[in-house]
Length: 323
Image 1 (cartoon, rainbow, N blue to C red):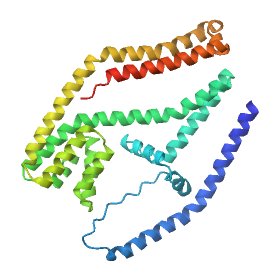
Image 2: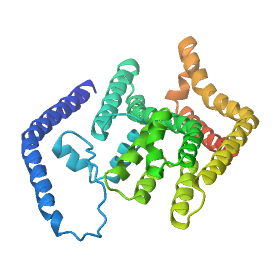
Image 3: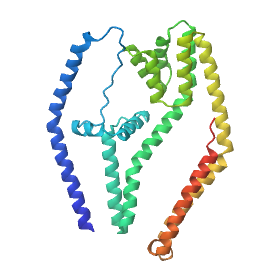
C-alpha cells in the first residue's frame, strides 16, 4: 500500500508541475488578449446609445494562473466559494483555496495512514482534511456577518443624521465609511464607489444585499429604494428602521437564553461519543478495538453515526427560532 500511495503522490506532483509550466507560458498571451479586448471595448464605446445604462464591471479572478482561472469559471460552485471567501473578509482566491484544501486533505491522509495503517481511516481523514478549510472559511463568514449586524444600526443612525443635516444620500454613504468600523465601513465604501463610478444607486444597493445577505440589510435596501421612488422623509424612515433592528436584537438575545440548554445538550451529545472512543483507544485499546474490526462493530458504528446525525438536525431545528 505505501508503494501505491507513493505512486499517486508522484503522479499528482508531476501533473501539477506540468500544469504550472503550461500556465506560465500561457500567461503572457492571456494578458495580451485581455488588453486587446479592453481596447476593443473602448473603441465601441461611442457606438452605444446615450440612454444605455452601463454597469460597473469588476474583474474578480478565481486564480492568478490564466488556464486554471478559465477552468474554474466554468463551475458555479467555485464561484460560490469565491463569494464565501469575499464575504468572510479573506483575501484568498478560490483557486488557492482549493489547492489549500487538497493539501490539507493529502497531509491528513498520509498522517492517518502512518499512524493507524488502515486505509478506511485514511479515506475518512482525506474527507475531513479537505473540508477543514471550508469549515474555517464558513466560520469566518458567520463571524463577519455577526459583527456587521451589531454595527449596522449605528451605520443607519449615522446615515439618518447626515440626511437630516442636509447631505445627499450618496454623500451620507461616504460619511459612514469614515465614522463606522469594519466590516460595515468596507461594504458601504464599496457601495459608495460603485455609484460614484457610474452604477445606478438601485443596482449598487442590490449588490450590497448580494454581498451581505442579511435580513436587516434587505430591510434597509427596500426602504431606501421605496423612498427614492415614492418620496418621503428618509431620516424618519431610517430612524424607525434602526429601532426595529435593535428590537430584533433584544428578542434574538432572549431566544438564545431560552435555547441555551438545547445548545448545550447538542454539544454534549455530539462531543461525548468521539471523546469516549478516543479515551478508550488510549487507555484500553483491546476493549474498544472490536468496534472497528468486527462486522457487528461496523454495523453499530454506522447506526450510531446515523442516529447521532439525525439527533443533531432535530435539536438544531428545535433551537433555531427565526425572529
